[in-house]
Image (tube, rainbow, N blue to C red; front, top):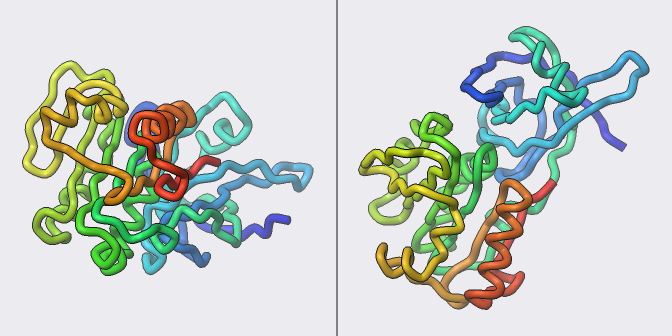
Length: 249
């Protein structure tokens, strides 16, 4: 049974193409990497809700959520009308085992995501620096969006790149529909789908190498992306489930 907490909307950032960052009071307990349920109470006292990973750190006073709103369902229709100062319901408990504490110590950790699935990684990077550095020698974030203007958390990438030491943290972004690619010293940009990273040609050209002994993978995002990447890791590189950690609602 869900236990709900009523929380005030403190701020809303309307990015573009139905993407929003929503800030509410942080009055729950969670571990970076987990998700919560966000809901609305209907006239019959029933709740409609969806699950969202958390962007913010457990220590932040505000709870930040990165939301792609589909306006065709009941949740989306109600959410579309929400304003600063309104109240929304949040599940008292956080869920999921998509946390760094559950990962084995390896040389390289790959954090793989698309769209709003960057959320758990931002939370982890913000609150688990010491744990990441103790478990891994390198963290590589593979992230995919359609267009450059969908890269709404670019400033956080730069922040983390400057906070983490030297060659510890890398951001690699694939733009699936962008015609032009910019150069940036913080992020490496490439055209095409995220799965292109795992092609022999790409790995050789960009001098990437990994194997079962030295790597593990966190994967979060659209079901098809998770399915495709997992298939590649298992069938092309012979990774097993001990090295692959998934988050799917």
